[in-house]
Image (cartoon, rainbow over all chains, first blue to last red; front, side):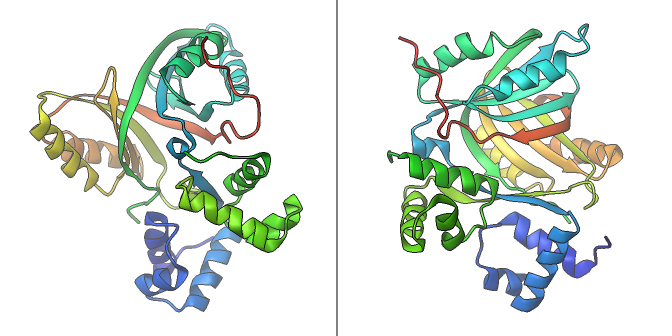
Length: 152
Length: 160
């Protein structure tokens, strides 16, 4: 699928603020609302837009703690990644799983109601995950910027 | 803090999978009337539980083949330098996420680039020149998966 400047303009404005009113978005991108709908449908059909899921603010649901856990795995076991990730999916408080090339192998984003809850999750559900060689925690203080925008 | 019942949790699960569902479609899936579904979604929005859409695109097809997470340690600390750093880092268009964290690093950044050469340019010209920046660790993202989170399944019990 080929993208032209109009597609890129629409994506640039839309990804920066996906919740914005469609009429406003059309105006910002310099197209009519009908063109906007047609172009977005074409981008969806072309597989460029994979999903449009609602974003949940876990703090509003009482999950005050968010921790980024960085793991290095025991790579002598060829199944280490698969087994670790499969087990991590079973932990309900894990809201994101990422794999990396670098010093860190896998990162889990974990939420908890408070520090007591966190301690329980960490001890009973995280440290019991298979093939962990090393784990480091970064506790989230504040999210300063969060956008899916691309410098298109 | 808002209390959720099973229907609210079912609504959140549906919307996390597809945030564009209409109240009518949501109602049909969950056996609610359209107005009842609408009222519940509205309540979740007003409580701040639903905060917009997370659009996932095929970044590679859009020409952004590389996503890198950076752990940044500031060289000098103090309120002023934090503010200067935050202001400057937010203005970089390639930086999608900035999180202030406690631990080995002070900030986590998510950076998109066209390729490794482009990433090197962003790192040298934009990141390493940020006010107060010290140690930087880079990890290249290979895969990512959003999970639904604790919506309806048994949560891990709090530590007694």
